[in-house]
Length: 181
Image (tube, rainbow, N blue to C red; front, side, top):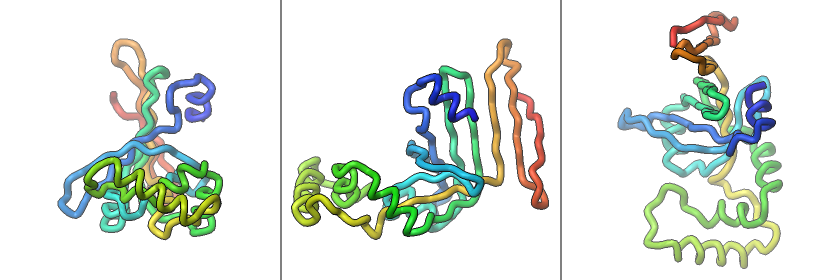
């Protein structure tokens, strides 16, 4: 409901969320991605599996997501286990993307050091010529789903007496708890 209200309020990038993971060095890292789907199973986004974020998730399949809608004084935090979505779901989303974005998934060795922007432009030209109008989904690109184990909803209020509600799983049931702000 809050995502729909952020969209209706026309806040900038209402579907932007921060993904936090932890690498093998036990250091946290964050990145902003766009939510592309959600249902009872969880929240879905798409990226390069070989990126830093993909490597961190391969080693530690837990993450936290955060939405922050400043204009609405709202924050949603979600924590849980992350899994890859099916190839069919990744294919369907990939094929719905604009052609330039599909070529870009091939052209960008995400999170890798490159000499210059020329590398990206040359890669895009090469893959564009190779695939023309029908680039297939790269094997290193697809979707992730965070399966929620905790949700926290923060609503700003005057006098710093904000509302914080946490929902967490306990024995297969969701418990609702009010947290002090």
